[in-house]
Length: 423
Length: 102
Image 1 (cartoon, rainbow over the protein chains, first blue to last red):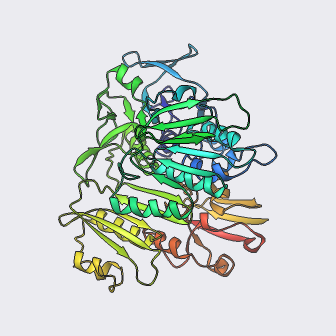
Image 2 (tube, chains in turn red, blue):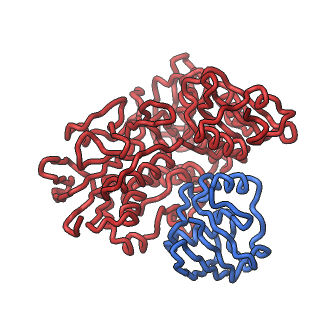
Image 3 (tube, rainbow over the protein chains, first blue to last red):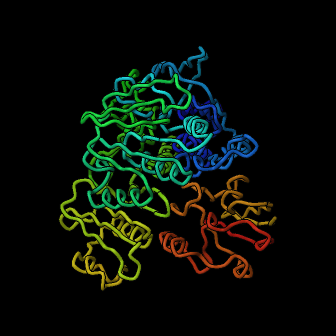
């Protein structure tokens, strides 16, 4: 490796930024270029729907420095070139070159796709013309939402009862706005968790004054922006119900940014860019990490695509090692968190495919609960509500493949600790 | 206002001053090696683990319940462990020394 080598990273969010710094740590001597269409200095995404949304700008300035991933000086110190506000048009894998939409070309010896995903905007009649309709994925989205929220309390309708929608609902209630969540499935969080946890969060949001409505398939939005005191948008569902909204937030899932990869001829499976254990794609000098990667998880013995900070950060470290010529295999246990109101949800593992669930509500403190997902005897995952101990134990058990004694785990007379609930 | 000394695992000594916010934010702003703060400071990732100098333990105080649980995930956990996203900067912690755990 020498200084003429160049690693180009497309995407400067959690995965791309962590990769750039990890490369230096691993001894990469060549140049590092980090490209992203987002003009902001790379920032933490999880606070976007939480603290960044609820915090008021100071002297008209948004508090974006508070959520930056790294200060600008760190990029300079590590000789990482940030190329922000720029888009990649195409990649020529044979020539090891890429072209930006501004016509500039860049050569690379290693290329990393950390392109993430974009919000899916469903094909709802009238959606394009709706007033104050936003996705929530970028800092700009949230700044636009905050602008629309000024001057009094608003009627906000959130389409989609997933984590983004629910975290946003919690933040907007904190700010005093009226919030309605419209979920197309028969329960919120249907795609990502169990009916038990869905029920818990439904009740939590209802207690905080959110109208949570399920089986609401939005088919049409009509917008009349003429009257200045009138609520501009009418949302119409398949069952005929209608909702008025000053602001509409859409959180119905994502689409992976895999177009560049597909155009090069990289293997795409289940919507993600297929990579090996070292995060390398089907092309030798091209890697893919983070939300966009479809990768093997040894704990579950199958390929997964994960949308999480943990996956972005951990995979970035593995890819950096591999790029620097070291042996590296990705074998992290997935984890995830969500903060809503005073509730801290921590999840570890992947519960998909469970055969049974054990739910524990602690006797001494019923705000602490945990859901333990099993496939026969194998512990697949744990969802812990205000219960870090359950989360930590679950993590340990899954990592070490420890068999849990389900009868003891289910008995809340028995204290939750490693000795008590293992054989 | 507090002056805080970080000692990294490479024995690099970094002295910084902070007005407000968390010690983790201060460390990240100053590029302290080994303090990542991957979760942004919500006590969810345990990537801002420090060992408080023994003489400063009283100033900094013990870990909270969630923090304590999270710390136990880490192999380098000891009785002086804290997640520094949970330490607020104030005059009370002026002059402390923190050893970065990783």
